[in-house]
Amino acid sequence: MKPVIIEFENIGQVLFDPSKKARCLTIYVKSAHAVRVAVPRCISLEQAKKIVTLRAGWIKLQQQKMALRQRLQQQSPPPPKIDYQQAALDLIRRLNLLADKYNLPFNKVTIRNQKTRWGSCSTKNNINLNINLAHLPSELIDYVLLHELTHTKVQNHSRHFWARLSEICPQPKILNKKLRKYSLLFTKTN
Image (tube, rainbow, N blue to C red; front, side, top):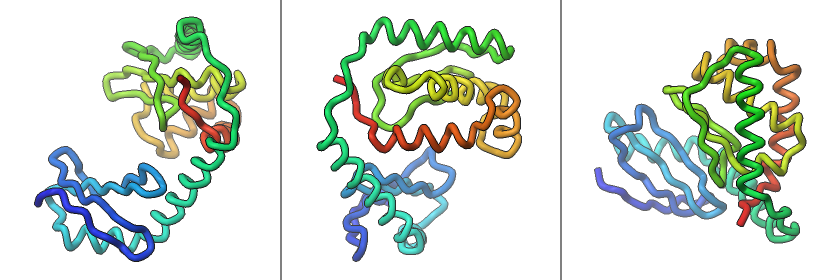
């Protein structure tokens, strides 16, 4: 299968992109008008089209959220400039402090200016943090750091992960909801 773009009635154009790495079909809504589907080898184009048709309601909802996010970004004043070096040092200091406090060692940390994620943790326990965390209240910064540190022990979002996170971070699901409100207004720093 080669990459192909197919028009769908309610969601517009969808790029079906064959992937050697994908183990399951994954739908990415990149913007209000950009949808990409990573198609593993074991799924035919016809099967992938059927799955997208079944998920059209979810895709449309994500497109609407993206459109709202874009409108809010255009209407909102840009976030204040961050002293990148100082913010990175502060994040790394706080991450090290929490890692030591809760005995959650990690391999290395990288600070980036990302568009879509506040943080991530690789299977090698490398932690990536978004420099834009510096715009958040301290309780949400700590939540993201503890969330990623917990991934050094549990590499998924199972019940076990949330139970483990709850041991060191009170009410993580409530903090996760608060963080989503900030994500909606998320803007990339210059």
